[in-house]
Length: 307
Image (cartoon, helix red, strand yellow):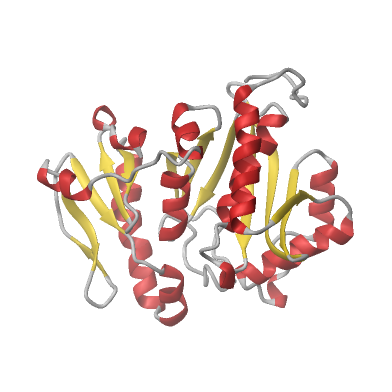
């Protein structure tokens, strides 16, 4: 949609109905209830949860201040809390955005976080499918956000499970952040666009998403550009192939906590390869579940549509 102020939809819409059902199923599978937050008491729970997830030190200040979350919800933005047995376990905060050049309205998903000890339960997935339903019922058909391309689990969730599309690479978006996840390293990010009504996203919502066949790609001429070395370090192999493979480590956050030198090497390697390729016009055409990004020229992008 473009330009017009969105209102809750009154007419029957099968995509909206589908999104609401998908969100309910995902929440049930994760064992959580997900509800919008209003008022400063509930906003405080969201703020404190974000700080726990990101390991913010008291000196750094909150990731999202209570008064900002309260104002965001009052202004029509998304502030959502996931709870399990009455305890906060995950949350999302999203702003309403407008693209200046086209007037297109969208939701900018600024933060989604889940308590790290509950990883693997599908809570993050449930929060994102809830966000899709939240957006569509308010007339928005696109959500945008950025994520750290080195965090493998988020890459797989965003590109493969949710069906979001990479739209660009941004260098050091937030500067050096003093928290347990970023440890004052460059905050390079992939920018994503999630077209909520697209066939790709609808297929992802129904579970019809298959990862690219990495062995088949290599037989067809794709070459390894970056891989994980024997000691967890990035190994960059020069290649001029039209289709290239960039692997990221299983747990970059652990590397950042225990070996900042190797973490910095990974940040530089991904910036010099994945980042530079995207800036030069290549596209990410898929990702495997074990962390291989597939890079291809725009004319050769086919895998992502089938992921």
